[in-house]
Length: 230
Image (cartoon, one colour):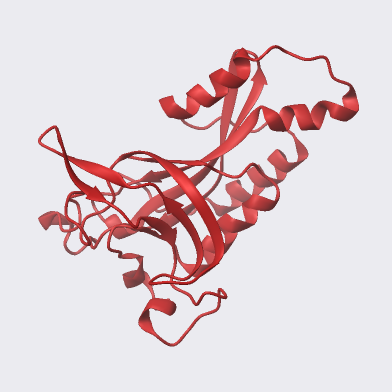
């Protein structure tokens, strides 16, 4: 079960610590694919650098990724987390949750969860996105289309049905409901009305204030290039 208990104070503290380069508590396990990035960095020959160049070297050995944890008891109350991974020695990495937000995917919620509505990743425009490793194809601050504003475009992904590849899910984004300029509009798809808006046709949705927070981390941390869904 995914808890909905607020952990905002801890995340704010971790952000401050990470920005200052201080140590923080290690959280969770790095997904295997994400760990491969760190292993590749560790395999590179160590270079002797001056104190002035040390921050740049450290930055080259760190990265972030996004993690989406599905909540079967309420798909509209799942969690999207931003994880920071630091290479602290040639054979050791540490991962930190920089922040975590409520997020939804698919048309499921607490009321229809027992009927597993929205929990079939092969059901286009209804089910949540398939589990797995996604490449983040691009970020747009002022996207204009069926969805608008702040978006991260995800690669297409085929679901699995009875152990075989099934429906190809496409047009998958991380987004909210806003106008292309980031402001709230008057139409339903540009206006956030409440918890019901966490539902989607398969995309990952955040409320406007949370997606702006996620975007804000781009200023001080490496930009995420992968999303891990489970």
